[in-house]
Length: 69
Image (spheres, rainbow, N blue to C red):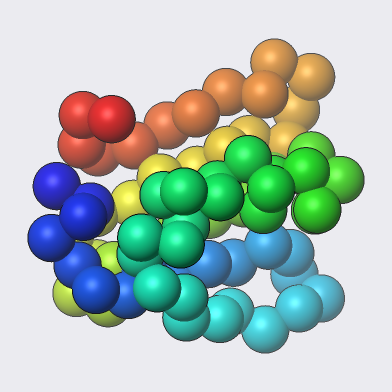
């Protein structure tokens, strides 16, 4: 589960650096991150690369992850 990690990394675009954030903040505010990025998609992953999720930047606005949300 994602909440077993204290921090996760978020990649919001090719032009911005990847940043680390408290996982509980991301879980609570995920929609704000997606909205703040102009619904252009985000990719979040754990520091050991075990878990990831992606909000796509296409017209379908899909969510992909390798764990149950």
